[in-house]
Amino acid sequence: MQLYSLCFILDRAGSSSGHRTGRDPVSIIERAEVLVTSPGRNFVTLRITTSDGVTGLGDATLNGRELSVVAYLQEHVVPLLIGRDPQKIEDTWQYLYRGAYWRRGPVTMAAISAVDIALWDIKGKITGQPVYQLLGGATRVGALAYAHASGSDLPSLFTSIRNHLDQGFRAIRVQTGVPGLGQVYGVGTNQKVGEKYDYEPAKRSTVPLEEEWDSAAYLQHIPAVFEAVREEFGWSLPLLHDAHHRLTPNEAASLGKSLEPYRLFWLEDCTPAENQEALRRVRSQTTTPLAIGEVFNSVFDYQTLITEQLIDYVRSAVTHTGGISGLKKIMDFAAIYQIKSGFHGPTDISPVGQAAALHLDLAIHNFGIQEYMQHSAPTLEVFQTSYTFENGLLHPGDNPGLGVEYDDALAGTFEYQPAYLPVNRLALDGTLHDW
Ligand code: CS2
Ligand code: MG
Image 1: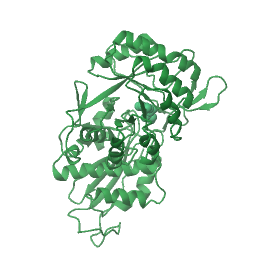
Image 2: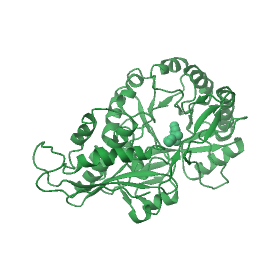
Image 3: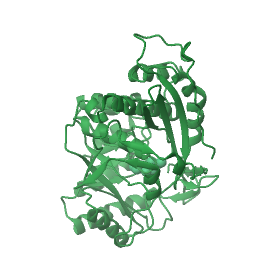
Image 4: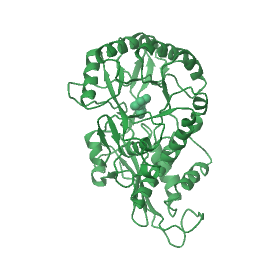
């Protein structure tokens, strides 16, 4: 994939963005590059460079729709950034959000998120501070992480759980195959003892792969899985589960109720939540904690869920909900209703996005837990990170900014390849179902 980069050399006679708010900036945005690389999976990164040569990175990856964000950035955002004051993060956010006229949506908000994250990276470098210090400093020594454990059956699931416990994880998400069904969401290849978890649902293909589904078989199967896991691993290990949008509100209520004896840390995406009121049904039937929001991209997607306390955790990715600025506003709103964070952190959030999430995790008071799926070795060679994972806790590190560097030469050797998330069809009759 050709490296997209748009370099506007500023004409001192005037900026291309035509803004005039306040004093003339000390330095301005001089270059913005949209970088695509694919070390095992596709990533889109925005790099902003100021006239002082300070660079900031933003994660613009939208899994399976990457090139739509590339185009949005390249055609409609980068030209507006050149000449702007890189320190005016909030004004730039509002300029790109309100100025677009066509508000919200995953593509627009992924682009705005990337700009926001890159500008916080720059502000950290200019001030010599890690971003979390600029957000009010640390309110915890580290962010509790949870791992993805899975298996096609109980023995392989137990091996996967043990592998992650041996790595130091202190919270585990549990996903298994469903008897009678083929590949389903969240079940990676069965791990051998000590083997790294490997699951990339967005397979490189020109059309989405198809998986099959049967909600009745799944609802029948899952409670016994958690009974066995509690039997094997005890009651102090926080366990999470992702229903991945595949149930009706009534099915979700039934699942939440059937899992109550196993005291989950959370049940995630139990039912599609565009219809936020659907969660009233689930909430009224079960005390199993609920996490929702990884496909959301604005505070309005949460408004009923938060004000009616229909969820316990905000699942958004910092890369899909307006960046550090956007997600922090949502978390400050959620804090009023005693709702905590559970930020999205699969491998389709790049190390830049993961680092941005960790700075927020450290700074906000209403932190809950952080997803940590661990990127592949090639990915971590392209993106050199400073975040650490010790004793089950993640820390972003104390380098100025986000603490991530990007290796252009290596990134350029990994060509973009089309890749799509799967689609789901009912095993019974092929009806298209939520994946
Ligand atoms: C999943 C994601 O991590 C999760 O909770 O829901 O892995 C999701 O399937 C992917 O981010 C889709 O790209
Ligand atoms: Mg999920």
